[in-house]
Length: 415
Image (cartoon, rainbow, N blue to C red; front, side, top):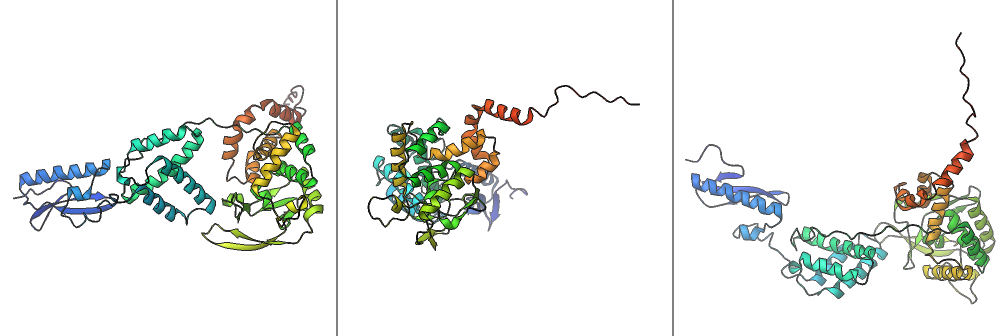
């Protein structure tokens, strides 16, 4: 006679013992095809404990534990035949509806680098953690730690998908950590350097572009996509609603916080008023703007604020700048101004650093720059601000120093 109370996970069904367990979020029951004798019940309980342990450690293979089960075919590994190249192609195909074309292009370039260092015909199930760590080591020979981390994030995304699909062991990515990197400090322009940059501009439009860049904090893609329809000089605002990607197509800002209304400082307003005389009356052009919804385009008619047709020596049909042109202009201006070269993106850092030095609220700066919160402002510019503590103290003393009485007020005696 079987005992009245069976061990956890052990049952009697149709006169035979069976065990149940949770695997991949579902409950499964498997018959052991033996009668419920005390000895068999003890063995069944031990087998159930072993199955649960294998599931927890990620070593459970359904077809090995229960080869005759109807569920064995469901969990039969398919990675025995899928190669690295096939895995990457499958992952890219599924990712293509989630990300923008530029992000997908970056994924493809990183995967191309991976396949140069690993055999694309290698069976996925044979890839070990040692293979991935050796790949990371190879990347460090030619790439910075930051770039290596970028590559490894993509690789971990691919193999995370492989783990969830059952192609590889669940423990494959355990222990693969990012390399430590030294945080890059912003390198803003000084006021003296900015003056030399403006003086080195060969054309009024160039002067207006860099003045607006520094005093608005706009990304260069946003500046190149800026249209007169987005500007209200009476209210002194710019509505940021599109961006020009590196690949040359227009798209919505990456995040919702990127769509914003920027309140302009007077130097930025002055630059736009000067630019208005150059491009405001040019005819509108037709553009397609990629929306966040996959594959969806909206058509607009805009008048770009900055146009290469104004400064081109030869006749051109280009009505808006591309990133390469802006980089070339910036490189030439830095050389002409004889200032230390830094990436043109530092104009955005210059805006943030100047505003913080002037005592602006970090939350206001974050909103102006299109960040979702002030956290990124603190993370990026916190160290830089700490170097300007005396400037902050001088500002506070100028504002509040004269308000404090020189001597304590005399107490009024109670009568």
